[in-house]
Image (tube, rainbow, N blue to C red; front, side):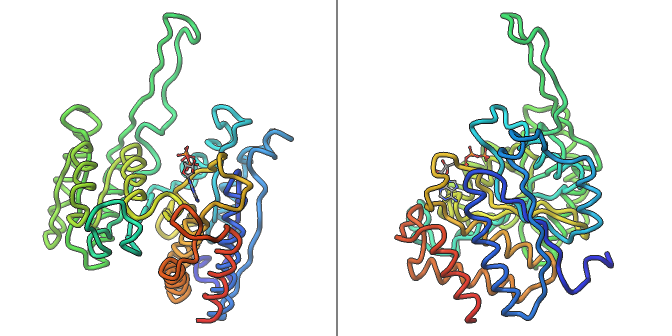
Length: 358
Ligand code: ATP
């Protein structure tokens, strides 16, 4: 914890692959401008982990990396990992899933706030209707990597993928969601599972939720099956403030949430272990279809850098970054995915200038 309170924040930068290599330099530009404007000190170290490095020398996540991040860094800013030259995305899952698991980043926080009503595909919905956060359990569930093949490649092939739910894992993410709501004065927490069909793992979610919610009587807590949740998010997103769910459902629900606020290009996320080194990234992937064309929206990455500032206690810098993004959207200084005429670098420049002058 003492490490977290140092004045210069030590940030590891992993641009990764595809549009990660385009959006992260813009996020860093804006982060540097915000730090300078606030008289803050940054110590940035870049890591070239990604498909190029993997194809060159086989490096994915070095064995000592988790320990190094815990010891030498306050936070990690990551772009995206994924490249068509690496079928199965071995390096991506080693690096990203590896960091999530080995740093025990059990909270995946994905805010879905509509900055401008012109960006939502929902008819007659405005900024006040869409402002919620999805907390996705980030270290277990169907992403645990437990399973295997039997008779692979034959007509009799069997593939298993185990859904791991632990008492500790379920309880800490549900508790985190309630604590977040309490800390922000929010009134509603909705837990989503599929306990009507997944009789064991999600029965555990039900029992833990029933227990934990009793400690937060001032918060209105509800439950929805995941299929209903997705339908309700579309039908009336204003009913949600905090959603908490398992790894797979959180992945899906937060992409739908991103769709409600203007698309993947705008959505940030934090992979957090409270009080420890944590990782921030845009929700989108490496998007090879648009990589290298200077058309990717850098705002998801920029807002992820803003979330990182907030996590590190740089509240004014976080607000400065978010205000700049809101202003850019209002003034049409955006990439084409949200209707603007600018390229990735031009949006980054505009945001950095705005942040510097505020
Ligand atoms: P992953 O599996 O890594 O999450 P994915 O297959 O879901 O990745 P993405 O790489 O996130 O896919 O991209 C999906 C599509 O969304 C892309 O093809 C691209 O058209 C669009 N997209 C994603 N990110 C952006 C962005 N920053 N700016 C503009 N369009 C984007």
